[in-house]
Length: 111
Length: 114
Image 1 (cartoon, rainbow over the protein chains, first blue to last red):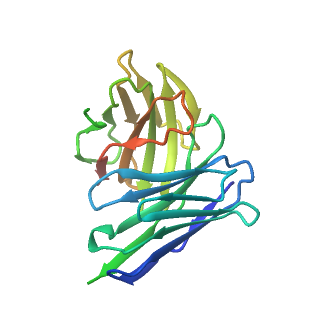
Image 2 (image 1 turned 90 degrees about the horizontal axis):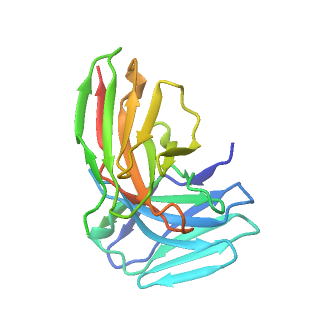
């Protein structure tokens, strides 16, 4: 089947930038998403990008997409302790609510 | 605007029993999707309901079923529970017609099978 892969752990110091990487295999992916999950909670949509874009910025978040390499990244500027959570990359195709998620990257922010 | 409500939050069941989980989507949302989250398999898509009809289905056995009511509330049922069904079950609602819309997730129902 089609896969979405992410590294499992990332640790950064407060104030540094965090970069979480994701690769996917489905060339028909149309939308790519980043979700955040805090302990005991559901997933919160952070941002998404169309496959015909290569960058999207939203306040402290920057999403970069390399469609040729099927590589997606999420950069969090000035990372805060409140950003500690699990971040999921996900993709879907056009007009389809069947989303495929990566395993999630656990981001730990140290003071 | 109320979020996605899942009930109950926690459940403990015995192997062989059946269980029903409930999800109330955001008002106006017509699509409800269900996911199973486990440490080993991550998030796996179960099925999606839109306007009372199952629109998409993942690769789960027939013991997993669902339905959606006219008010868009959805229920998920698991029969003949197995230990491996222990998981966090997440419900996500969306308009179902605007893409991409992303999902709004509920906080989940944590099912433990003993």
